Image (cartoon, rainbow, N blue to C red):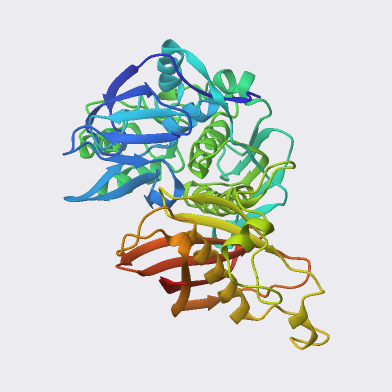
Length: 475
């Protein structure tokens, strides 16, 4: 498994027709900088809006995964993105700008192979930044009882996917597919697997505005009810397709042959890989999926994405051994007027003047004076003290700021008075042994009055938050 991030050496394009929209489309893959991720860019729309390939932007999962972001003129959409994302994830590409000349990538032959071949022609370039792996430390599950869908993401040392499908159809039966090694097996074993649908679904899909670009060259159609050649020709004319079709004996229209005995299961795995790329990070996990579909894939991706965001927050606030504090307790004492037992910030780990943000923390021990009465037998840090600690952290931001106040004097000769609290919420109790991080951001300033957004977090989860108002005055 690759360690550093990866992008393309050069740009490459692939053209064709979109599966569901029927629109002519060209997709162009471009190299992208470290940390860029995947972003679709609609070059046919005004200002070429970007659509980050993240699960938060999914708006539709009817026979494909559609992303959208708001624009000044409505919405910018990218339909049926799962095969493109599967190719990128399967080739372990971390950063890629994906330009679309229409609202849907071309379908090719219904597999991910056309995209894989194009990307391989462009070549790959290793970047200097390490990959930001999401390493699962607990099992995440998703079930849909009505559809008999079960999915799970289990902790694992690398990335594996196992899929099982059972359509109760003679042409398919029960199938399973597993991808043990993305690096060596995706291109040969998964990318060539084509999309498929049942004959009974074809007309309904077309009436719902889907598969307008579908034909027997880009989809496998499974015969799931009795029919004959005459009925099939009528169906093709109704779909606007000038294709001769026969029932045949293989269970697929026109006696199409499978590329793999379990090609449908492999294609479902291809879709799972593409949809889970919407987590926004490479994973170390084993994905188990029984009868998956886009709706279930996306819901599992949402749950994994929430875990990834919590872990990002934890890493953000976690000091490495040997890291120096921006302000240790001695530096804080030089700035703050507070003293025992009311100094509630132990250390400042970040002061970003440009972004007007500060991060600090307090180690909460059982020896805290307030635990004697709050509460005997059930020690909980009072919410008002969490507010005070956030306010003190915000005060340190103001007193550490070299920006000048309205009377043209530096804030180091000032005091900060707490003026107001808005939208205070207490979400979880803080108890002895917790390390509480405080993040305070400046919202707005009016003369010597400041409004700030404050959060208190334990293990990456918000335990309290509020909007605070303060004034800077002379000492």
